[in-house]
Amino acid sequence: MERFAIRGQICYSENQKTIRTIEHGYVVCEDGKSIGVFETLPEKWSGIPCHDYGDRLIIPGLIDLHVHAPQYPFRGLGMDQELIDWLNTHTFPEEEKYQDLEYAKKAYTIFLDDLLHSATTRACVFGTCHPDATLWLMEQMEVAGLAGYVGKVNMDRNSPEGLCEESAKASAEATENWILAAKNLSNVRPILTPRFIPTCSDELMELLSGLQKQYDLPMQSHLSENLSEIDWVKELQPKASCYGDAYRIHGLFGGDCPTIMAHCVYSGEEEIRMMKEQGVFIAHCPESNANLSSGIAPARKYMELGMQMGLGTDVAAGSSISLFRAMAMAIQCSKLRWRLVDQNQAPLTVEEVFYLATKGGGAFFGKAGSLEEGYEFDAVVIDDQKIRNARPLSVRERLERLIYLDGDARVEAKYIKGKQVI
Ligand code: GUN
Ligand code: FE
Image (tube, rainbow, N blue to C red; front, side, top):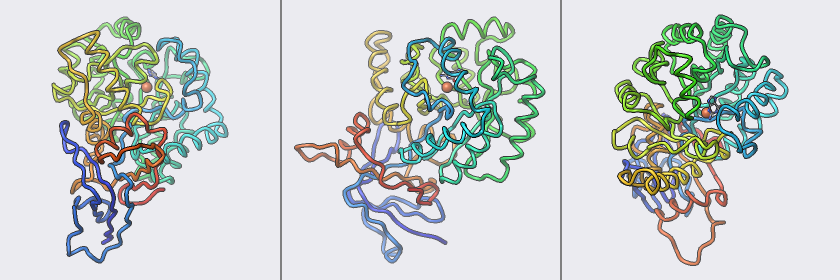
């Protein structure tokens, strides 16, 4: 049995309303899991190795429920269009390049290095439709010690020639081979990733549904992000009662198929009811929704309804892989929504967005996103000394400030499932 402790200025989310802080507290790890947070180290463990991080902040690893690894090279570029034009002008031409494994390796190396040095410990990642590049990304992500799900994207219609898979059958076959090739990985698992309804034929969705059942896989996709996209889905799938129903009719919308849907900016009552009933996770991506002028998702409403929800950076529609940035944007966008759209939906609080970035998204992984007993030991040690201040701040204030000023902080150490990865 392997046991050790880390010590520092501890900060984690107990629930949507409460952040708990413990000054110079201890988190004890046993076989990759936390066995508790303590003010003083219990006597029975007095002899275990303990790394004292002094005045550094210790928080649970942050969870990114939605990020596109191949889009990292053009983050911060081309933000002047809405979704469909942005996909055609910026995204698809970049993703075509991942046909070339050498380019993919170069680009994914940079993405993974930045992800490793960020406060993110677990991520749900979109690759491209290319199996070799996606498998390489997964293997390297695992080698780096990161955890999460990665998807080979499926797209067999309404896509440029260089990116469109040959047929539904070819797409499903490549997906099955990729699932089998990934079987030896343990911390980075495959997730079915039909890009979104406009690029996936009914035949392809049916074949993916078969693979979902056969291999018992989760799935991730996009939902109700942009108004033209929603109109297009209505045309493409007239049988569906709403956008979400276009996934549900193929058995790919929660229930026995653990599902993450990014955005949900315009989900109506029926779609919301279906998501809640089926336990579909919402990846709230406020920066992306602002950059592509998509809108502002009603995150307050989703919280009040007790929906499953976490945050996504959605790089490159979101420009930063920082979940602190996503937290700040979630608060800021909720304020604009409250002021301009619906005065009954109060802005999100620091407690709430910290919950979303940790326990909220972490629930997709079982017990992740907290330092409490029984959770996976995913912890991040942050040096915020460069953010200078004339007066002393409480641990809670230092976390709050970090949400807005994270660019000036540095991740000093990171643990995932009890293993130190930096
Ligand atoms: N919908 C389909 N593909 C994408 C994508 O790559 N990014 C975003 N934000 N939405 C999408
Ligand atoms: Fe996305």
